[in-house]
Length: 124
Image (cartoon, rainbow, N blue to C red):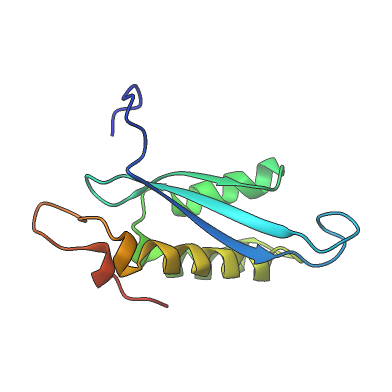
């Protein structure tokens, strides 16, 4: 998709998970991961999170941008080798949640010119 396009992403998928107590402040808070999906090829174009950690966001972007939703499980497995600490479990959970939301039949988009739909992407 053209960066200068006024249209923006075709679909934005949000995944969330609860953060362990102490990471988001005194009370447990939520981690949200936003995936912007292109309708032309169904690939992730952009990744954003509610956490303001530049290294964490850069790691997620490097693993996810350019992948399709059905390829996120592989990225989550790679994440386990590259991320240590209390954010690993909530990150994997938020990614699984985003994939689940992105593959629901009601919110499905055409994944390509051949008529395939997002609903055909397997859940994990």
